[in-house]
Structures are given as C-alpha cells and as structure tokens.
Length: 181
Figure 1: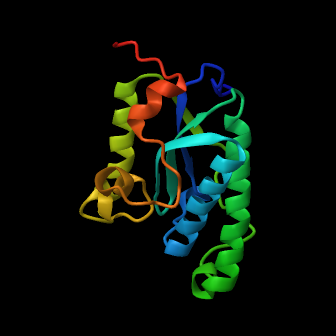
Figure 2 (figure 1 turned 60 degrees about the vertical axis):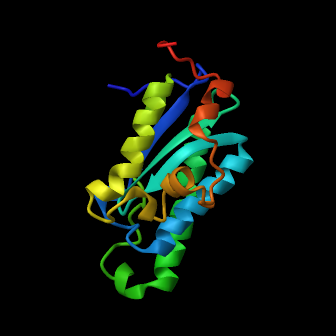
C-alpha cells in the first residue's frame, strides 16, 4: 500500500528516519554532528523552521515546519543525500577501524522516512518530550539535557544547539491549528 504524505495543511511535521538496516552508523559524535549541521543548512536553504530534534545512534527525529506547502519531501531528500555523502566521507577518512565493520557501498539511510502531521499544541509538546527522552530511554544519558545532539538543551538551559530552534510556543504563529482551543 502506498504511503501518503500530507504536506498541504500548513501543519508541523514530526519526521523519523533510520540508518540502513538499523545499523549504528551515528555512534561517533562526528557522524551525529554531520546530521545536525546538515539540518541547520537545510533549514536556512528552504526557509523552514525546527521546533526540536534528536540524533540517536541509528535514527533521527525532528519537528519541522515549512513556509511553503509541498516542501517536506524536497527537504528530506536533500537532508538525507547530503548527510549520507558527508557521513561516508567522514567514516572513510576519520575512523578506519569503524568502517572496516560496515560496507560503505550500502546506503547510510533507509529509503523512506516516517512523517506524522502535528496539528495541535498538545501533540507538539508530546512529540518534543518523546524525542528529548529518547537518549534516556536508550540509556545513553541520565537526563535529556545531557545529550549533545538534541534540542533539549535549548529548551531546558537556553543553550545554542547549532540548529536554529523556533520555540514551541511560537507554533501558533505558524498555522498550527489546535482543535482543543
């Protein structure tokens, strides 16, 4: 059954994508950093906003919003392509003992991504909390703010996280409709 992406309503999008075969290609901080810097580049390139993100060892979550409808698939294609190329270059040149365990002919990312339309403030907060608690649930850290590759530090401590974050409470300005209001 074909998947449908709904990108015409002006909602935010909770996206998830995984490393090919769920491999832990993002164990190294350098690889996670590539994903984060590529996200920041794509946000400015496509006039997009990010409410939050987390980069895990084998998958990525982000809460995104686009000023123009129909932008999500282009954004994701470029984010995954550019980060894939840079991660392969990093792994080839930076950590040969790691690349010996994987076939660099394989893709970095699974072919698709999962998209969930976020249409309310309640759902936006739920997705942010889910995302930020991912490293704690995976026993990678004791608290969300300790994970360096996440927007949790922005929300909890006001620190820069390399990606420009639009605070969640500004979502009302971005056409999210809250049916509970």
